[in-house]
Length: 97
Image (cartoon, rainbow, N blue to C red; front, side, top):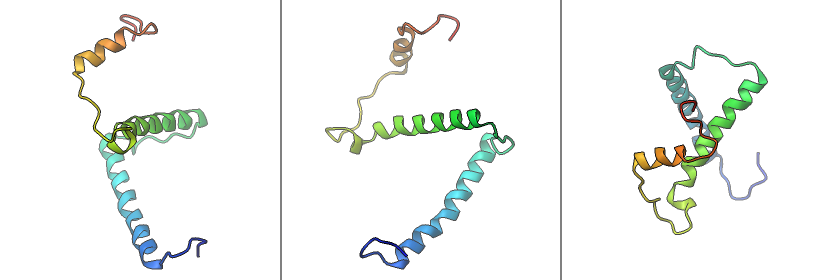
């Protein structure tokens, strides 16, 4: 079944059993967000969607303690300071986004 040593069928079966719960959770989340009514078939739209999803996941992952060199949580920043740092970017067009 696998090339991995010391793996038994029970843990694999247990993990595979969680697949249904994950799919059910995603289905419920899509319905709540209104994404169940939308279907993307254009490749460029799908590619853009996955870029957004992976980027959001990566940003969240980088802020977890295991990904930080010292193993601590990132320092807390006030929301206003974050917004002001965006407005200082040279690509930020005042009033245009």
